Length: 126
Image 1 (spheres, helix red, strand yellow):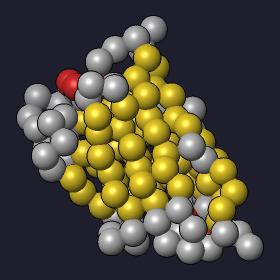
Image 2 (cartoon, helix red, strand yellow):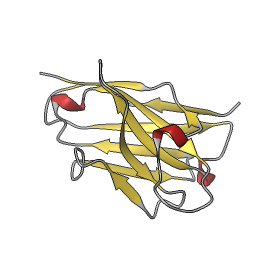
Image 3 (cartoon, one colour):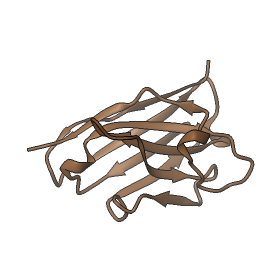
Image 4 (spheres, helix red, strand yellow):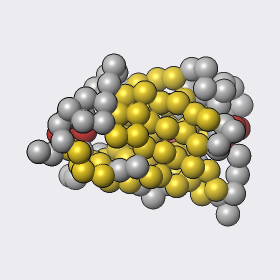
């Protein structure tokens, strides 16, 4: 069974940092473009960041540029999202999702991602 499993969420004060992990279970992430998405209470799910299969190309939402960094360790079958300078508006459930695009580009349309994890909750509050 193909699964993506997120971890690393929690409660952090504004200005703090967290690192989220997205691990592949039952399949090799090397062949998948991986994206991070988040959903705040009462809001729609939004894209946060995306990384190509090779890891050479990345993309970020404007709201997180300069604060978040996506990376992948294909040997560990894991994708990471390092989140620094966290703000209360970063609060939400964070999901990772994967899609096996043929090309090596950071393309992560929410409606086009086939595999989703169950999410990990990030709360930024003092």
